[in-house]
Image (cartoon, rainbow, N blue to C red; front, side, top):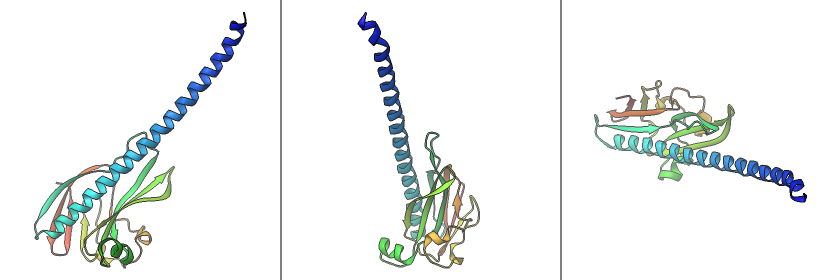
Length: 183
């Protein structure tokens, strides 16, 4: 008779432990998914930056196609607000390349509609006076921007990509001009 009295309590303890384990597993899965997405985003931004550098170092008319994926998986709560190409500050560029001018590719991250302060930043070894025209999502002429900290240039809205997959053609149009288009 005593076993029958303890069975509901044991069942309650078992269900509570199972629920706790499921919550922990879901949190771990969410964190793993966010980490995997951040790594995917870093890889795509790095691939874009290295392709820009390769085309810039080539002769006028040289062109490369790069596939980049900025799309977040559905289970990730933090989202990329935008991906921009901007001028780097002299200090930032000097730390990366030993010279005071470069470009940067920046992905701004938001969660719940608010900027988190986290950003994925990749330096691009291209002088700041090179014009980069992003024909995919708008006109992107960086040569007209006064240099300063890249954080202060967040209002420059013409140099951004949406949050999705792209196959981009990057072409050197002139010694100081690069176009980004869809093939």
